[in-house]
Each structure stands twice: as structure tokens, then as C-alpha cells.
Length: 118
Length: 110
Image (cartoon, rainbow over all chains, first blue to last red; front, side, top):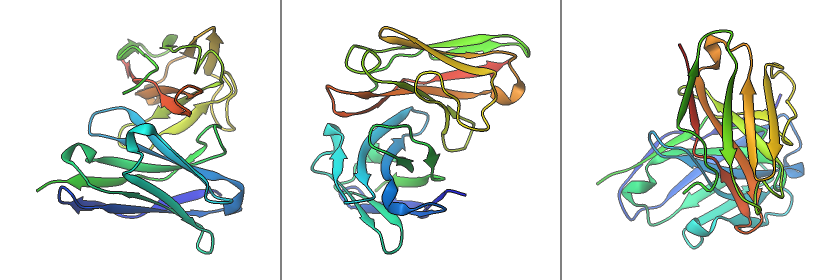
């Protein structure tokens, strides 16, 4: 069965960076990509971008361009999302989700809470 | 900032039918298929509907989706207590070259 298991909660200071991992299992990693989606406390879902599991091509939401980097490691079937220059309004649960380009997000990780606080 | 607009909340009694609307534009719903996601309290979202009206395996047929022009709707018939959740529509947006979510609708079962 398809599973996406994310890394644990993080607490960061403003200006720092955070890197969240998403380990995939139960399917061939390179046949799908990943979207990253975040959800601030009590708020809705916000798409951050997409990365191909095949060749690492990326497509970032304009809001995050220059501040986010998405990568994959096919040897460990793991996707990563790094967000830099953290601000308090980056406090959110960050989700990875399996996705073919522009297709439905069909499996989701459990989410990783990132708290940004001085 | 969401580009797909949903009502903040709706409610119904067990067994009733409720519908949730999702309003977009020609660059998203008007030209790409709509997905719906269900988010139960404290959990990750789950794919409920894809390609406007298709249900993934395991999703009850009480859930149905439809589209018309630049709008979409999700209907829940025979409402059950376990349907109490937040529901989000989503679609690809050609102008933004990205995925957009709706503002979300909280369904309460009275």
C-alpha cells in the first residue's frame, strides 16, 4: 500500500531554514511527483509547488519562488522541501502529497508542524 | 490567497442532502477538471472526487461532484455523522501555472 511518511515537528527561529522530508513506499518512486501543501492554524490549504520524482523538475508557486527548494533522492525514495528565511506566518502544517503533473493529489503524508517563533 | 470561492460553512441533519459550491474562473474550473478533498478533524486531507465527478476506490457513492462553466458542486446525500469535516475544491490554474484550492467549507452534522 502507498505510504508517505514525513519527518517530525520542528521549531525554528525567524530567519532560519527548515527542511521537511517525505519518505515514499508501496509504489515506484520515479513514476510520480510530489506536491507540497501547507495549512496555517485554522486556515485553508495552500499549494507550494511540485517536483517530479522522475527527473527532479520543479514548479513553484510564485509566492514561494526564491525561498523554497524541493528535491528528491531516488536512492531512498524521499522527497524534501526546504523553506528559507522563515517568518512567523510560515507557522503551519506542511504536507507532501503524491501527484502526477496537474493531476489529483491521491495520497498524502501525515503532515509536519513547523513552528516559527522567537 | 485562494482563487476558488466556497461558502464557509453548511449543515444538515443525518440523512439529509447538502451541497457545497465552488466558484472559479475560465483559467481554472473553466478549463481544467475539479477535485474535491475531505479533511476530517486533525487529519491530512483525503481525495474524495477527481475529474469533476469520479470517486476513488473506497469513497461511498453518497458523494458526487458536478461542474457547470466556471463553477463546481459537491453533493453529499444521506448525510452521516462521520461526514463532519472540512471540504476543499481544487483545480489546476493555467494563468498561475499552479494548483489552486478553494477557501474550504465546514460541514456540520446537526
